[in-house]
Length: 196
Image (cartoon, rainbow, N blue to C red; front, side):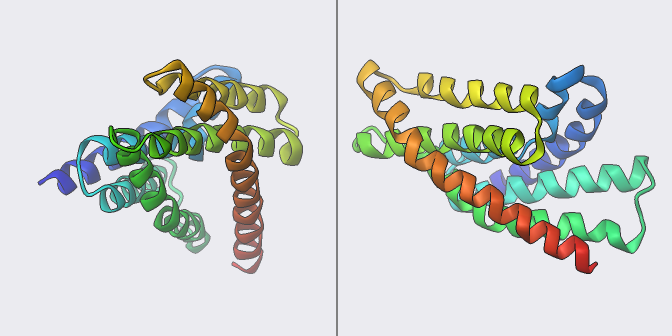
């Protein structure tokens, strides 16, 4: 039953993403068009609903299907090439879903503080990596700055000051890995869309 709840939640978040892209003003619209924002749902599904790898993946799949389903329905995006985007993002969801679902479960682990530190660094790192990608690769300074700020604030999710500082320090290597992942996703997307 929880998996059904997670899937429906993902579908709703995905559809809402499409709506919010048109409603949020200026650079704020990027929050609705952000992979980092989407993994927050996977993180919290893993933290609170059990079976973190499964639920992290299911919610991300739901978000992709909800977003592209809403786009097909309301924006009439039905040409064969419209299937390339969902295919790319479903592949990303297969990797990111378990990672961020498990990170959410680790964030709640009272016995192993290192897990909490890594979990929060993963969540913050994806925001910072996306922000850097937006700034460096696409030249979107306002959107990138907003994502950087959100990532740097993420260690506030920790329970103690010491864990906040440790998570802040852990952002450095995690962000480097995240930026490599964003460039990899960009190259993969480019290759897929070019050959579609």
